Amino acid sequence: MCQLKTLSLNHVDFISGGAFQKMPAVERIEVNGDVGQLDGWRTFAECPQLKRVDFRGVVLGTGGPTLLADCPRLEQVVFHGDILSTGLGAAEHCPLFEGYTVKGKVLRSQHKDFVPQVSDEERLEGRGLADFMSRFAPVVRRIWAHGGGVMGYMKKTSAPWFYRSACAWASEGRDEEALAHLDIAIKLGFAKYDLIKGGKEWDALRGNPEFQALVEKVREVGDYLYVLKKSPAYREDARPMPAFTYQSATDSNLVRVRRYFNLDSIAGDGDEISQIKNLMYWLHDAIRHDGGSMWPDCARNSIAMYELCKREGRGLNCRFLAQVLSEMYLAMGFPSRFVTCQSKAYDTDTDCHVINMVWSRQLGKWIWMDASFAAYVTDENGLLLHPGEVRERLIKGLPLVLNEDANWNHKTKQTKEGYLENYMAKNLYMLDAHLESRFETEPADGSGSPRMYLVPEGFWPLSGHTTYDDRYFWQAP
Image (cartoon, rainbow, N blue to C red; front, side, top):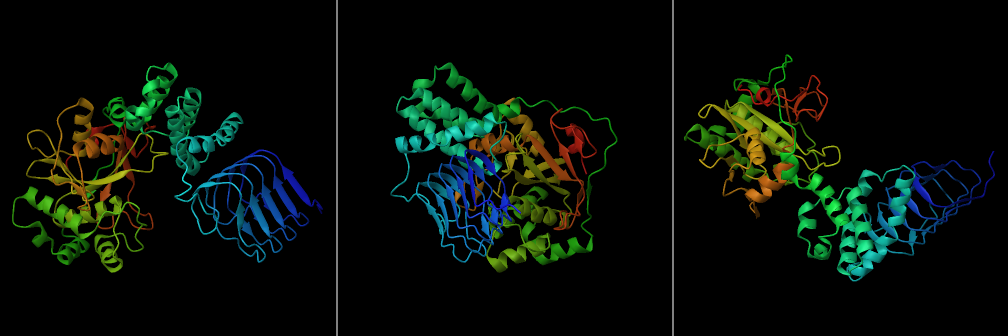
């Protein structure tokens, strides 16, 4: 049996969850160098003699919340240096442990009761922030030099701070440091092209070839209209493809939806287009859009989700608003799909958007309806468009008109520039919809029909549920 009492480490790129478990004799663990990332899942656990843990360098980030568990003699965990971001929380079954000691500064803490972050009075800005972030730059470079990668959650957290520190260095005329921090920010995922394009702090560097190359890298991922315009074209897919189907309004569940919401009254006596709009507007007013809300803990149908929202005073994110609206349309006899719209960087960009396409017999075509923003889109002549047509017109630079009353929860007006040319230009790169649209199209147990993806040619390998053929995807019901 190992009788090691003190364990000392130097610089460490990554300390995994469970790294120090069941060490029967160890009394002290110390990391004398910097730490890249520290997984906070029972990292120090079941060490009956462990009394103290010291981190003597800076720590880029920690997961959480259970770093410590089942260490009955543990008294202290001391961070002697700065921490960029931490998720550290309570220790489990460590009766002598009274809390973490951080002698440096913490820029961001997810659990401020356990690890306080810098206060408003101490807020790091300008040169202070630039100096602070300079302590973490070598850690990131070392991780990359060793062939490793910064974890997704830390990339998202740290990229904006490295960008801000780059701006601070640039404002002081420290070009070398500014470009170095900008390079790190971009490699970590910074993609706000409009920010770097318009930032006055970069004016002195506009003619610098190195700066121009870095800006071009940001443009390739963050100038969403530019990225969309560069996307490969669609093409015909000659393979036999499954049909999209739409449940009949005579289905007993959809009949129940129609009666429950009194949809005939909501839709009104006007023509088909006014009815389609009225249903969308009603839902926009009835359930607020809350993009950060938890997934509803109920059956995934319009009645159950509406009742949950009214009972708990909560909202729904775009996905569930679109599901509710789709059932309302189906119940009124309008074929409908909810369409997930994603960016080219779908694997790292979780900010997708979900809207509805509903078939208008009056127009003989699909049209775009978005209950999250009470939004629909037309051409210059007032013809309602569907998502594929909006995408094509964005690429070709043709006129698009967003309805004047598009808004977020009646608080923020939506504009063509913000909603279409930025947000939706980003999210119209890849589209998908379920093959079967029905009551509870997407049940909580995941038993819904497959989703068919429409992607630019070559973006994804073709499979049974992927196509490059936009005509197939937008086929009439």
